[in-house]
Each structure stands twice: as C-alpha cells, then as structure tokens.
Length: 129
Image (cartoon, rainbow, N blue to C red):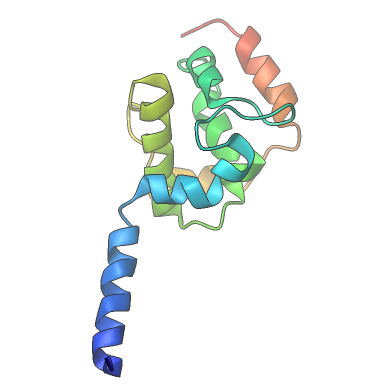
C-alpha cells in the first residue's frame, strides 16, 4: 500500500502534536535512563521517592529545575515545566503550587547546579516552611 507524501506528513504532524502532551513520554526519554522507570534512582542518582523529603523546603522548587539532568534536558521550557509539574504530582502526590511555568523554567535552568548533592543536603537540613 502506498502512502502519499501529504498523508505521511499529516500522520507525522499528528503524532508530534500528541507527543507534546505526554509528560510520561518525556520522562521515559529524558529521565528514566538514570532515575529508572519507577523513579528508584541508583547508587549515584537519587530516588524520586525522596522528593517528599524536599517538598516545601526553601530552595527545593529551584533545585528541581537546576539539577543538571533537568536544566540540560533537551526539552523546551514549556515541556520541562509540564514534566516537572507531572513529576512532582507523581512522586509527592501534590502538584506544585503554583505550577511551574515556561518563563520560570527558562530563568532557573540558565544556571545548572555545580554540586547538586551538596545543594540537596543543604535543603534537607533547612527547616520546613
């Protein structure tokens, strides 16, 4: 069966539009290699289960965008914001308030953390808001 070039382009465009709304797809492609599909992490990469420990602590919101894996992910600011909103809801059972926006992500990811382990430690020892 032959598919015309026009039909092929329409199908390609439709699949691209659909993929833009799937945060889980972005997680699979951009996060699961290090954090694993279940968020368990590894001996070098923290588990996403630890997000609950960081949630609500001063600096945690900025931290999550500035960790090198997020800050340097090959995603647009819009897609990274959507992914982070989804990720926090999935691993803390609470959506970030307010939700991340593309402009906030753009500002924060310009300065990836040089010492994410040290920053995480600093946040964990800070008192909750």
